Image 1 (cartoon, rainbow, N blue to C red):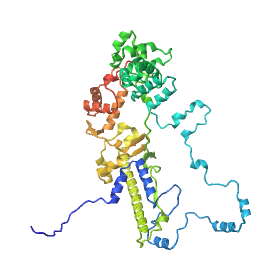
Image 2: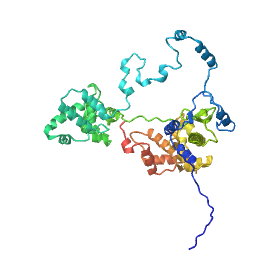
Image 3: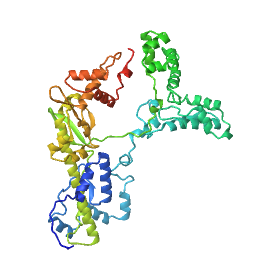
Length: 504
């Protein structure tokens, strides 16, 4: 075997750190990007935030001619009063007694207490004279779980320590929908035998908990949940007795939409039964859902679309895009020929600051190009709504802006557009297509909008089946199979026709 040196030529794609940083910033959402910018500001002294109204020289501090001045002259302060020297001389000539007399009791300041320690609007009562409208807990709490809400009411109820222990155990068995998951027998078995807790005691405490808010809580089934809510209604409520009878004895017939059997067994006419059902439908089958424990999630739009002079304009949300710049004072300390550790550190920080600002600019430019092409393609949606949405895939936008589909996918992920019709994720404007009888294409989003419109206008006594909806779509030139209609209907949260049937 002979050893030899061979020279080969080839092409290889290498991702530089700058490119990796640009790609990472490109796929971040607005909130994540703001956190990334804050971390960069804290770690890199060369970076600073440009506030509104700042007037500064945006030229490169390391450009030729700028460095020589910075190496021989000390940087001047950002602000200097023209009368500073004169004032200093005047102060030096004052005697101590005169100086103390000239100091006022209250010195003027350039900021107010409210500017620094701002009290949120949610923590102060409104100017309304009605104290009943002010609720401290609802306006200052950050989310309350169902269990904590129930325990708060339990602690206010007068009862023995033994009953309170039973109540805490029962509350732990309530799920997020507000139903008791365990049977009373299982609850009794969970206690220590030495406590000598009997089934009657547990049932008595359960009845007390079922009087708590929200109405219908701690029920063991749907019928009991509805009955608990009906019992809290005024006794003069119309059709209250019939509604209690229906919830207790004929709830299964109501679930199967067997209205003829209900009218015969309850001995009610059609109009009377309709009013009873309306009373039942006004109740909440999931009372636990009224207590929202999750924190609200806020969406910050990246792009704002508005119409001006019959033209759709696209612009970046400046409130969501912080403007950064290189600190000219710190950058002036960097010396080109100095190789000391401090100078090397500042030089590296300056280079990283430039890369970071350039990556942000590249992200904004790419986002602007993609958003502009989306608006150009989906003008019909902006003018007329979902039914005018056109089919659109990543490849179409990638060809228009001259980028790869993976880049378009990163740009449209977790990026939002504010339009007159609402705030939408950029991915919302992309959808598959279905062929029409005329040889055209119809987007799946438009088909969903048409299905939703057809269901909203249907006869509640005879709701449209999936096959009937497919036939109506075909009459409009849209060729859609029945199973496709069922898939779109389920994605919209619309129940099947058998469950949509109502007694009108």
